[in-house]
Length: 70
Image 1 (cartoon, rainbow, N blue to C red):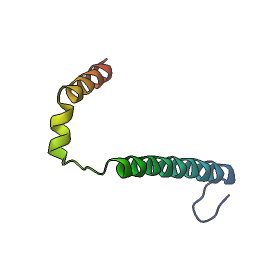
Image 2: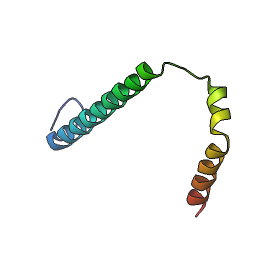
Image 3: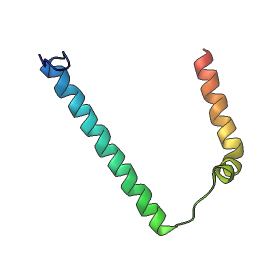
């Protein structure tokens, strides 16, 4: 067992592996977003995004509310 944090070696390896996977996914997402930004560098304020999503956002929120109320 790791004396510093009192966790087993297998748990330590599992957590390190999951963290590595998350880091790689975040990096891939960042690269994709930067590529999209280079192709179209427009940016939007939160208010503009809210207006653009409008009913789509409401539909998604309604769906999740129904799912969690079951």
